[in-house]
Image 1: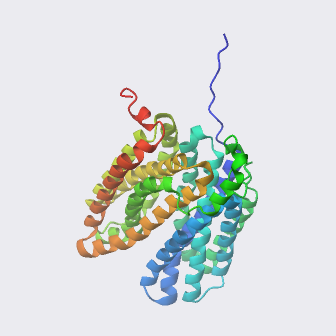
Image 2: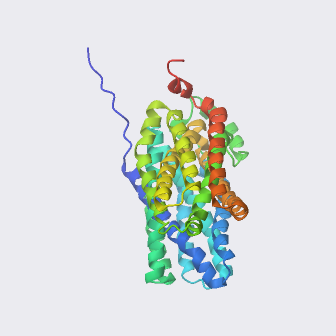
Image 3: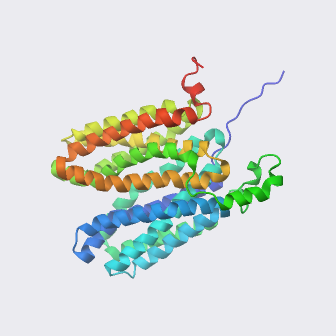
Amino acid sequence: MTVKKIQREALWSAPFILILIVSLLVSTGHYMLMSTLPLYAVRLSGNRAMAGLMVTLLTISALLFRPFFGNLMDSRGRKPVLVTGAFILMATALLYNFTAALSLLLIIRFFQGAGFSAHTTSSGTIVADMVPASRLSEGIGYFGMANTAATALGPSIGLYCVDRLGYNMLFVWVLVLSVLSFLSTLMVNYGKKYSSTGASPDNDPPGSGQRSEGIQALRKNQHFIEATSIRPSLVMFFIALTFGAIIAYIPAFGISRKIDNIGIFFTVYAVAVLIARTFTGRIADTHGFTKVMIPGLIVLCLSLAILANGYTLQAVLLAGTLYGFGYGICYPLSNAIVIRLCPKDRRGAATATIFAAMDIGIGMGAILWGWVAGASGYSAVFLLSSICILISLLLYMTLVFKRIPGEREKFCPKIM
């Protein structure tokens, strides 16, 4: 009698590592500008409101273009959209070096949002295509770590460039990163070729060739939003509302409570996200999404409650650590769930759908919490944010949990 050893499917490959590098380069440049362009806009205009407009404009642009690029990926393929996004980002990075007028800055920022939406949507879909199904959550988790590393590196590098070298050198360095990322995208080749209908040959069901004309006709009328992604995207929308509060108001929160070095919050947050993503995907792939998702949401809720009542740097750092752990769990798992639920030839639209939900949540959150802060203070902002997490938990259990194949069996094995 022979003993068969069951080996885990390989996750790490040259294409997978390359797409991680591309994502790190693009996201680092993105966050270098995210932390400095609002200051540059205020410098050009003398109007503090322009700082918020720089963030809002990028969000609106990304939201508008994500559905288009998602559907384009499913009809024309992943790599053309990835290369297009990298090219747009490279072109806008070049134009920043010649911009001294606020109106031109806003136009370039809008197109940068289009390029960023093309890149993030396509790269996330490519990762979902190339990683083994048995290690989907783990693979997406590692991919997300590139973006998390960029959130830790980008802002500090950008502010250093502005303080020591000036805006011109900042734009030069962003251009260098953009050129490297564009050249790297040209080398991305993970062995899957998509037809004009967006279907992968190795994923087509038996007998599908006889229905090719009907499928092509159907594809022409596909919606930009993937229906199977709406429910998990709602979960992520309410989480993103809280993230809007974090990225928009933590600095002002620190000033209002006289907490020095509040920027360390983002450092501990990024480290916690990185740690969470190294193991939660593997656990979810083995034991199910729900056993990891519920603790992640609870930790998020707790972190925001601590932040609402935090008046010392230690309390803020504890909240940042917990928020990082919770976000590092919930975001990649939600993304993996979206991929698990959608048809294989609709992964582009599915990824675009959840990203669009996050864009709307962050954008709405930045505006909503500003009103709350003005009326009731920052304690109310973060307490209400914790309620948003409870809503996410309720939505997950009522709308998503039962729709994931095999999830009930993994969550309650004895009952089933």
